[in-house]
Length: 116
Image 1 (cartoon, rainbow, N blue to C red):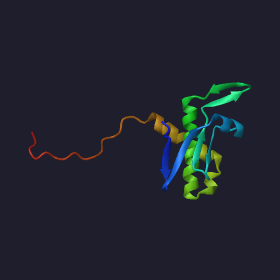
Image 2: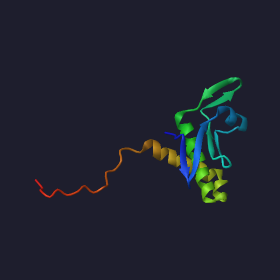
Image 3: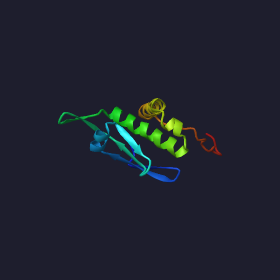
Image 4: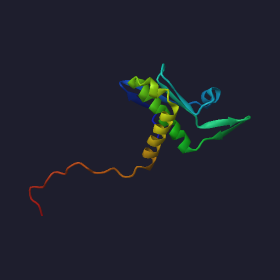
């Protein structure tokens, strides 16, 4: 699942599908740190025809750009610019989010005063 918006350090980040922009920039996605926008592509152009990316590719792209946004907001510009690190971290986040199963019920349940 990809959110429409979310917050980092109080800044609202907007997520937009823009196939024309990403095609023009020759990328799967990008983080615009001036406008706090993550652009993702769901399609790519080959010749005059458009083809769809797989859901996994679109989600991986989102998490890749999320890592850029997080690192930018942390002021970690060296890591922000390290595409190998960002792509690996984004890929692992995408895999975690797409394969996690039922949440663990770790909260303590109140004890009954009259155990049966």
